[in-house]
Image (tube, rainbow over all chains, first blue to last red; front, side, top):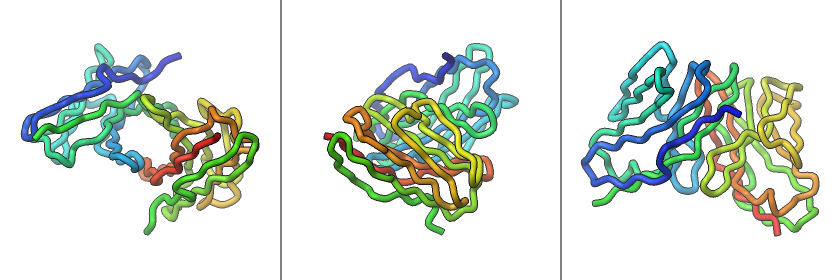
Length: 111
Length: 110
């Protein structure tokens, strides 16, 4: 079946550098995507979302890029901080309410 | 505003035992759902509800029952626990275009 997946399971970056986390999706009809951050022992937290009629959306230190041609989604975190250490998930909204999650990428910040 | 709350935080069961994981939200959201999260995997949808009295199956519903008698509560029942149900369980509610997750219940079935 169609699913949402991530390219890499782990990512290590130096504090202060920019981080890029990637996600591929296979359902070309998908029109809404969300990035979540999950810290150890906690539930996922909403970071940013994007609809398929957009290519880019920016938040505070985060940017999501959507490339519909290759069905690819990325999350960019600027000036990575220790508090950014977490597992990041992309999710696809199927239908009106059902979220389908990717596998997750663990982001580790090196001092 | 407590958001989404879950109890218990931790639970150990023996194979064959039954239990109910509690979930409540105070945001008046119609949509609620249950996910399980296993190591190295994303969250997988177990059951969901689009409103009181309405439930439906998700991706991995076998071994779990749900009911939705009120807007606020969405309990998840394990009728006969199996070791394969060892996991972390998250409840979520969705409103205003966003999903809010509870803190999770870590369940171990021996």
